[in-house]
Each structure stands twice: as structure tokens, then as C-alpha cells.
Amino acid sequence: KNQVEQSPQSLIILEGKNCTLQCNYTVSPFSNLRWYKQDTGRGPVSLTIMTFSENTKSNGRYTATLDADTKQSSLHITASQLSDSASYICVVTSSGTYKYIFGTGTRLKVLA
Amino acid sequence: EAQVTQNPRYLITVTGKKLTVTCSQNMNHEYMSWYRQDPGLGLRQIYYSMNVEVTDKGDVPEGYKVSRKEKRNFPLILESPSPNQTSLYFCASSLADSYGYTFGSGTRLTVV
Image (cartoon, rainbow over all chains, first blue to last red; front, side, top):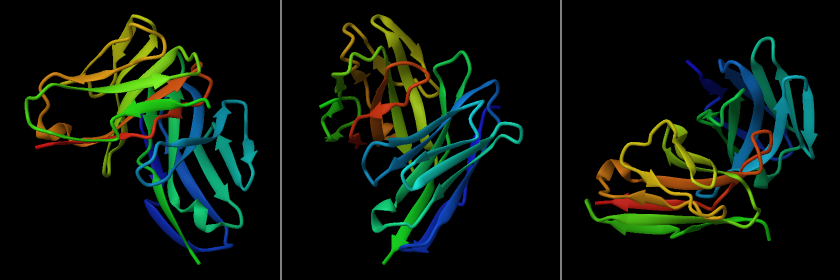
């Protein structure tokens, strides 16, 4: 069964600290993996998209990694800011389909 | 401004009263999709459309209908809403499978 699991479910950190969010997937065949940021009550916004051949991709203070062999991805946030408080969702697409399998997200809270 | 526009943002209705949630995108995207988001379950796909007059069921299509008569519009229809359809709904569009989604701002529906 195609699944995407994220950990931790929630995380609280102090402003300025770094953090890493995890995503494990069992989707096969794999096409690409996306990380989205979702503010409460708003639509998700794309942060990164990674294909099978990409190991690392950065978007400002956000760096995503992908290990296609172990089917794991991580999202590293550097020097966190209060505005980083949101849910972060990992989404995997299976090749040849338009179906996106969503993780349940990690809820991040950054405290001053 | 490139965007996906959903209306209404909030809707309270009674069981059995037909309703339509509209979705429009101005990016000439071929691919559009509807999702519902419930606590602890993440985003689940209801229906998607790969182009005009081409639609297909997602993971949770029961109780919903869609149509794609024009490229820019993809309305979600609830013929006879029930309380278990109370949820936060998102419309999204994409240029192609390898591109990220652009999500609308969401419609919070309550069925009493």
C-alpha cells in the first residue's frame, strides 16, 4: 500500500534554532517528492520538489534531502523564525499517475 | 496574479441541500484536483481532472461530483450533503505532473 509517514507529529523549538523533519514513504514506482508548508487554515505552498536523481535541494533556509534507496526524505530548517510556525507536509507522486499521496504533516511551533 | 480562487471561504448548510463550491485558476493549467483535509488524516484526493472533459475519481469520491467544461473552472458539487462531509476543502491546479501544485485558500464546509 502506498503510504507516506512523517515524524515527528509535532515539534516546538526556539527561534534561531535548527530542526529536521522526516518523511518515509512506501510509494512505488516513485516519481517525485514534494515538501509543502501550510499555515493554519490556508492552502499548502510548495517549498521543494525532488525527483529520483536528486539528493539535495535548497530553498532559502529550507533544505530537503532524498535517499531513494531507503525511501526517506528530510526537510532541514536553518535559523528558524517565528514565521516558520506551520505544518509541513511531505507529498509523494507515483510514476504514471496523477495521484499524490500526502503525509499527515509535522506541526512546527517556533517560540520567541 | 497567478492564483487558484475558491468560493465561498466558509459555508454552513443543512443535510440534503445541494451545494456547489467553485474553483477557478488563471494559469492555464491543465491539471486540477479537489482535496478534503480532516484532522489527523491529512489531505485526501476527491476528484481530479487532467484536462477539459476528462475527470477521474480520487481516493474519497463518494458523495461528490465534479465537472470540467472549461479549462479554468473545476466546481465541486455535493448533491445531498451529509454531516460526514464537514471538512476543509482545497482546490489545486498544476501545469503538469512534474510541477508543484498551486492551492486555493480553502473552503471550510459545515453540514448540520
